[in-house]
Length: 150
Image (cartoon, rainbow, N blue to C red):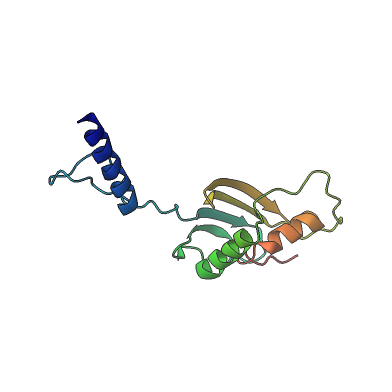
């Protein structure tokens, strides 16, 4: 009898797993209730841009991807760029390495701050155009960050 109970429980567990039913609670019918599949949270970023030399691009923008939406003026292109960087395994929000040698050129007073989540990770990054490395970092995120006059 015990053997039959164990065998029945095993078959039920295997069947439930095969059907994707992983809930342990039973519905009104007494059958396991399947849990909804969890999809990854969409990328959600707040982009604050100032001192670009273009009053139309300075401001605060909300950007959400999958699908692209929000107040960002180039949401679709920005999400495409972020997806491209993710496929390449690059983290565009990583600061410039302190030991990195950078050209001493001024790219203007533009500043940006990006906060939120990207690829399931928290983002809290600042961007400037104070040297060649920072200018390159800024430009690599276009159109998430707008073009800035130097």
